[in-house]
Image (cartoon, rainbow, N blue to C red; front, side, top):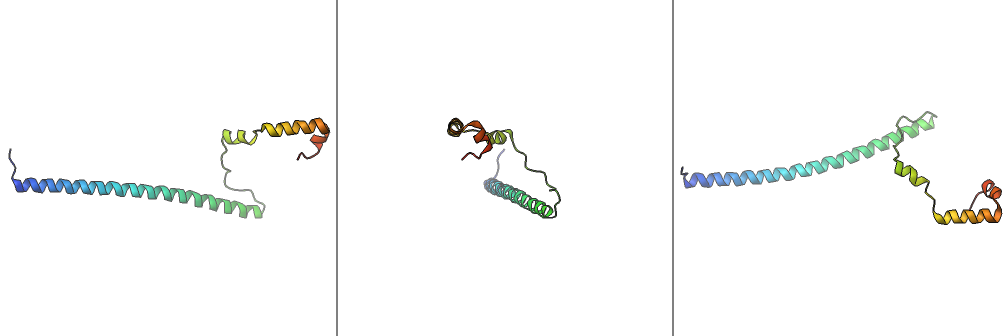
Amino acid sequence: MWIKRDAYITLVSRVASLEATGAAQERLIERLNASLTRAYIIRDAERKRSDTAIDRMLNVHHLPAVTPPDKITLDEISGLFEESPDEVAALQKTIEERGIEEVLLDEVP
């Protein structure tokens, strides 16, 4: 089947126009998704700020906080109890010099 040259040129230009429109719409969708992600981050920060403000206001009136505390992961908890070998060695040296009772009953520098 043959198609007239003018009809073919019209169809090709329409396809090119639709492809350009589709690419522009994809870029618009990407920009909107990025804006939405930023809006979610801002919303979460504002919610945390307002919850903290409400909890502080309640604490002024000696009432308990209404927002639950942030959940702490196991890695964060175990990181609190890590000991450095230098501190352990310094503590052992202090125990040897002053005695364990003095170290336990006194503040260690």
